Image 1 (tube, rainbow, N blue to C red):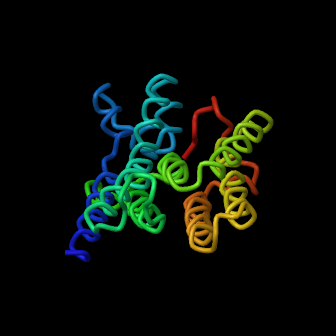
Image 2 (cartoon, rainbow, N blue to C red; image 1 turned 90 degrees about the horizontal axis):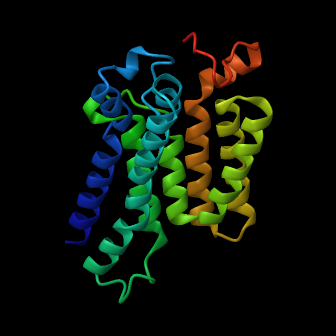
Length: 212
């Protein structure tokens, strides 16, 4: 029962993460977001190609895909496994496990032949569920970098680095700090092409149509 419960919730978290909200939103507008702008199904490309309201909507939905498994699923797991008597006493490892499954679902969705987004919004949702202070600091860095540089990708990369540092310096403990490192590292890895373009000076600033 214990193993089956964890496997079931992990699978549900992955499937929830696999829901391609960016593509669904674009399809509702008669557009395939995979054939527009950068071709990415994430919120940034939706915002760039379909406008701010839909971009913000996509970001919120993608973030919820990470937040719900990280914040709600652990409560369900703890109660089912009789490990907690109330919602305030849950094993944080569950949040990391289920949140990571959701991120993998977004990045490698079974519904789209495992070709998904970069996981920034979904990762932010997971972090909000397990390490809200790290999210606040990371978001602040993202806003500052984006406002100064105009590069969404640069803001995301530096925010991921800050989250990693925060994880090891803010007293979260080795389990959560390691998880934040892995999640931040995955976000940076998913931006490897952006890093190449930033180094070459060919990355598009926000507001300009992507060439890739």
